[in-house]
Image 1 (cartoon, rainbow, N blue to C red):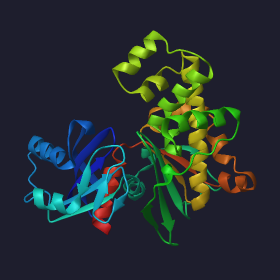
Image 2 (tube, rainbow, N blue to C red):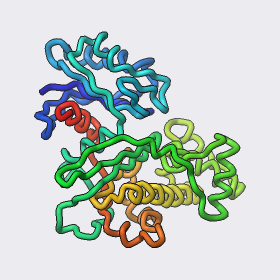
Image 3 (cartoon, one colour):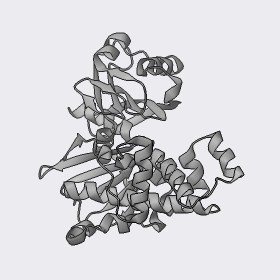
Length: 330
């Protein structure tokens, strides 16, 4: 089965062609585009088809697209892009035989089973590393936003499902975090975990800590922030900017707390997978951070938390693998 697969994110969109039997997946012609450069998913797909010479009616009869936003039936309004995505419209315009639409984190969850040992990095082995992981699992992805998904274990295999857990209410623990909540309430009104544990969250944390410490952004860092991604600039500057270092320390602690919240809600003894771009790009900083302190700190539930394996997904194409598996197995 050949499927045109896509991973539509708030910052970048990846498109490729997948060969799959529903289990194994091979990808080719994977290309990435700045999402904001296009006014719709259809226009982006058309450019990809023109560049690669793919013809849906001849080369790819099926399409499967993982979207950063809640999918309702065959429709999605993306959370961090001004796009309306309609699977029926894509089928009609591009002459696909069938198009599947799924949440991007659900796609990552579908893709977990296609990952090999070199596609993940272990952060915590869990209670019985010598045993195959069984039980529910979950995926938490910090990228442009914060995505979350679950994998229900039926006794034989996992069944992925989408959530919008990243948009649940942020809960502060100490004086600094209460001040953070108040700072962000003035900016956004309601404050979700996505506002503090994502790429946009890193920018928010940095802005707050400047105010908290009554500090100013150094000129060299202001130039780097102006030239590109605030989160990437702050993360890269953590070694020479005290506010940036504190920002990343706070980010990893909060990311660990919310990852633990999701894992506890799912009782994810089958594993917790950290997706998105931030964790793999800052792997050593994550290992050295208080991420696991935040993850484990669940009071009487801490022994259960320590039994859960925690792994970082290293393969950026995981949502594309998952979209192909979804189309092949649904």
